[in-house]
Amino acid sequence: MELSVTAYIVPKSGNTMEECEDAFEFSLEQNRFAIADGATESAFADRWARMLVKQFVLDPPFGNPPSEDALQLWMLPQQEEWHRGVNWSTLPWFMEDKAKRGAFAAFLGLEIGPGSETIWQRLFSRPALHDSMVWQAFAVGDTCLFHIRDDALTCAFPVTHSEQFGSRPILLASNPAHNTSALKDIRSAKGDYRPGDLIILATDALAKWFLTVHEAGGKPWETLEALTNQENFEKFVQELRTSQAMRNDDTTLAILRWEHHA
Image (cartoon, rainbow, N blue to C red; front, side, top):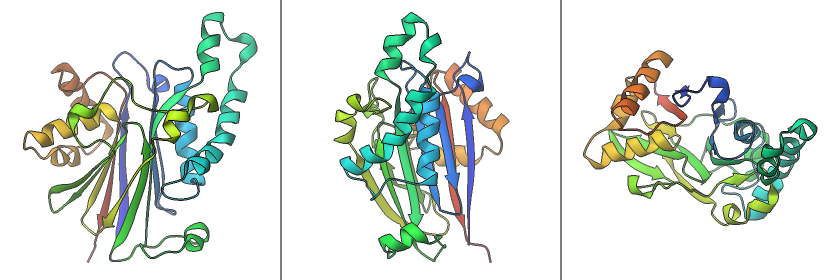
């Protein structure tokens, strides 16, 4: 049995990859996966998104889902590092207020492991693949997870319908003063995970397209699975943007496959 990951990122049209504010990170050793979407209107959101996903894979918050206190404590070192990384002395005056407010990002963290493991096993042992596993995820904002089994969507999390996407989702902030709403809006989900299942992670523009197609009776996972490389994904995203089936935004896709080899 083997778990594999395929991931692609495309920046919004007119931007370079260096300007992209999406981030994705994973570890197959720990079976941890994280995806984040930095808010364009905030300052240095790309760095904040990257910090969140890297730290989750390295050392996730205590509990799944974490409590308000656990998530706040987990973010604190990243918040301090983000603040230190801003060159305040050379910051243009028009950026200063925005930087003081901080960076914002939607975030989803996913762990896969045996359903019966203890907290000590989770902390100190490397997860192994069994015939049946459990996935557990928590999210703040509108970055999404889709679980597909037997060619059917079994879970959409945390957004379940395309019309639920809005222009102002609740986001994690690099400034602790602006996390009151986010800490009260920690969403969680879990499910069993079997060989042959797919888990798809997507930032909001792609996730909205996915749900829109599914609500119309389609199977969007088949389209995404057919994308075999970065070039295919870029062409696919551009076609959707041109036809206005997807808004122009940074777009990230990650597909987790659990293949049962003979």
